[in-house]
Amino acid sequence: MIKKILYICSVYKPNIGGVETTIEELIKNFRKIRINTVVLTKKYPFYLQEKEYINNCLILRMQRPKKEYEYLESLNFIKKYQNELKADVVHIIGVRRPLPLYGLLLSKLWKVPYIITFAGGDIPDSNDSQSIELWEEGKDIISMATLQADNLTAFSKYTAKIAKKLISPIKKIDIIYAGIDLKKIEKIKKHREKFKYFFSARRLEKSKGIDILINAFFKIKNKIPKIKLLIAGDGPEKISIIKLIKKLKLENDVILLGFLKHSDVISYMKGAVAHICPSRAESGGIVNYEAQAAKCLAIGSNAGGIPEYIKNKKTGLIFPNGDINSLCKLLLFSLNETKEVENIKKEAIKSVSENTWEKFSNRYLDIYQKLHKEYQYKPFIPWSNITKKMWQELKILKV
Image 1 (tube, one colour):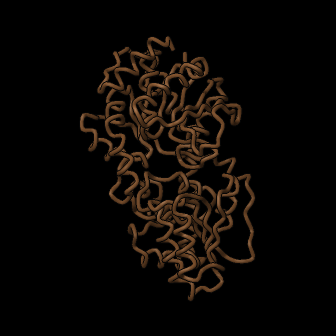
Image 2: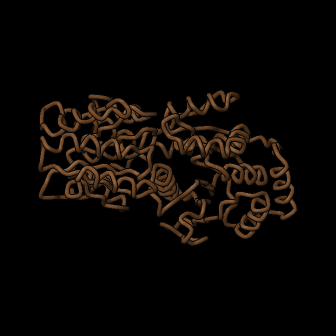
Image 3: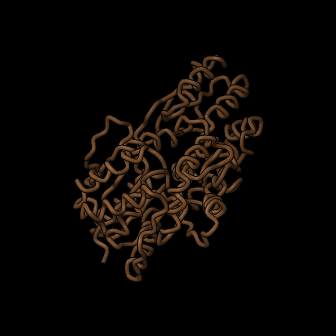
């Protein structure tokens, strides 16, 4: 019987993204059936506490090791929190280095199932240079940890396809899309402004394509002078985005809202003409489901798995990746309160209402229970001197 699950991810709350939301919702649903959870993540930003409770779930944050001695020293963190960490299932969501290694080591030490979920940004995409750099930096760890996992899942067929191509021995990856909490979204009040606005909730990084959206908005601004663009989020591209806004003289028309609580993001969606996901690279994007659930017209590029989350002209609108002129046409189209736009919104809310977190939590639980029941221990296979040393050290520490 499963009593406790260890979730591992590269970053966690207060950071906001698809991985963080997925884990948060799984935790909430498993608490209802009295399954405990703990989250192991990276200490980022660096001012965050090493140990913290968020919504009654223990969050443990470790420093990211880079050199061999740091990897060995990091095992002291594992020993320090061994009782809090120990679980019946280890599930890593997002495979960025180095945490897949810790998940694999702990699962082998405790002799429990190890599940990996490919989230998207952890897999290299030709339209996202950062994802390629991250993959190259940690591909040995990711590949070997993946090949020793007991089960693999992905947020989209697109992400699964890339993972299989990169790690050729992989034969099967289960597709489990992100979900939404429709009841929670329905309770949130609509944000009201004196003006009409487009809205985009995105991390401010190049792969998310906010510059594409701003350039498209600039091209239609003269035709619709009273419309504004509101952008929620923060990230490394913030300074570049501010410079672009100034260059295009849009200081009064493009408003950077910064970091928003999830409930505020939904509120802004409800008041918007449309939510735009202009990503250059994306696994799929929970945000696209959330926009549909908020009865907001969802517009997205055809990058990655987005078309799996937005069905073009059925539950939203899709434009070719990076095509500013095509996005302009969709922005103008969305402003027309036509029957077609309303029908898309109605179909979207009908479709997305089937994608509940409870449904997807049950799918994960079925995987956990099946693996736990049929589990057959296979010894850990080191692939380098450091992994061999870490495995030996863990056994000596008697974690």
